[in-house]
Length: 265
Image 1 (cartoon, rainbow, N blue to C red):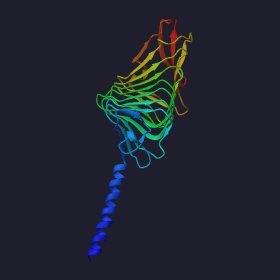
Image 2 (image 1 turned 90 degrees about the vertical axis):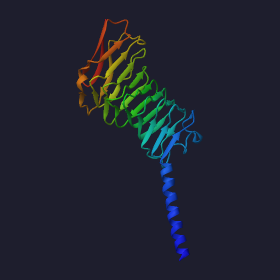
Image 3 (image 1 turned 90 degrees about the horizontal axis):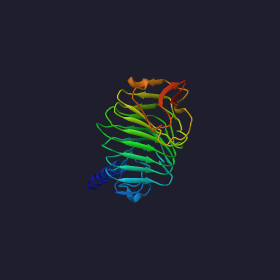
């Protein structure tokens, strides 16, 4: 009888340990102040991998992807928390993962590499996030989404960086900004199916580095499943065009399935 009780206790204990182990492996946190994203020692439970549900770059930490990193198994979320900074200089394959910024002020700075994400969400009440893409390419297989409650910015800089949203579309929330900083020859047009510009949102176009004489510049190219530009500001009322000193004025308009910037001498 004692042996039977002992065996039951042993089985329950082993099962409990397995459950605890599973729960612990469901999350891992980048807890060092700064360091390599791909180094086990910088994460509380090892680098994001098999069994990880949520990977978090904790408050005020700085993680750098300097060599190719691939999520081998589906990871639900990669979270960039308050004052956390993710620098991307190399390839990141996370096409089944949502990159989430939801607390105060997270920053992602991509200067190189091919990055693929499931979706990119910038949300949270009165938060101020930024994703700055100045080199390499970013492919989002779902949506690029700003909630109406966040004061956040997606900034695309130069004439080499590429943004493609292949699945859903781009939604610019009521207090957020899509900023396009042209390089000497212009900018690589964003590729997307749908664009929602909510009332109060802003599109900024900076031509201070633009040296070309070209007067028509493609900004956004809409795909075969183009469903139109929606939202109260869909008439492009909230547009700031600055820095084009060689031109007298500029405006943006929809030309077939392309959003273009037209400059006037």
